[in-house]
Figure 1 (tube, rainbow, N blue to C red):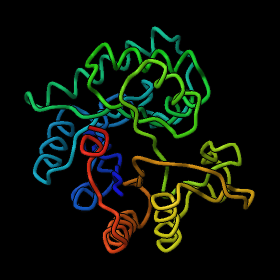
Figure 2 (tube, rainbow, N blue to C red; figure 1 turned 30 degrees about the vertical axis):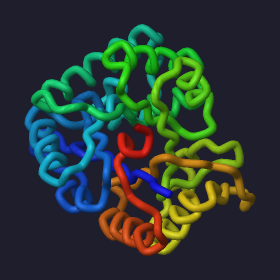
Figure 3 (cartoon, rainbow, N blue to C red; figure 1 turned 90 degrees about the vertical axis):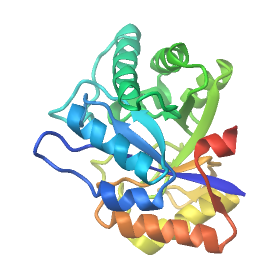
Figure 4 (cartoon, rainbow, N blue to C red; figure 1 turned 135 degrees about the vertical axis):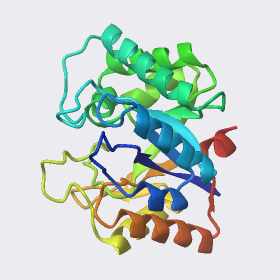
Length: 253
């Protein structure tokens, strides 16, 4: 049994530092690097690519709506074509910083991610834009979503994602951050939740009932308080339980 651990990094901007990238990168196998639309800038993108390479972490793009002021967490009324162009622009920018090394995956951020979960047209725009850039790129999507169905119908490489530190609704979507309890801060709960996701493919929803939630990759948010401790705990628990922690390319390849 094997699973990938991913985190969103490179989300600092100019003189504003966000997250604990230098620490959390030691405990993950895939990095989703901000591409400048919700966070990140050319200097931080270059530094973050170098950091991921230094630690042998697989590099992925983390494109978003053009929303620096709202950190990409506000929904925007972009057309499918506009979304496709935004994806192409951002993935292309990050690819240039990899200096010819292979970009492994793409995982949209925030409100764009949430929109794709239930909007077939936006999901299709994202999937087709990524495939047009490189048909070997892995598409990181929320497990059991409309987005996963769209991606599989397009015959692209799909990585089903679940979240260690986010509560889910009975329908399997992420609970909005505006609701109490949407972000899980307890290290033990995050660890046990992750272990169950990896070993059983199940998670307890916000109503207390279990739902099926098979995952290829589990996300830990780098800006969540205690994120480094959570990542270290999850990884060590996986390893002691006989679950291999590997990058997506090793799991899906």
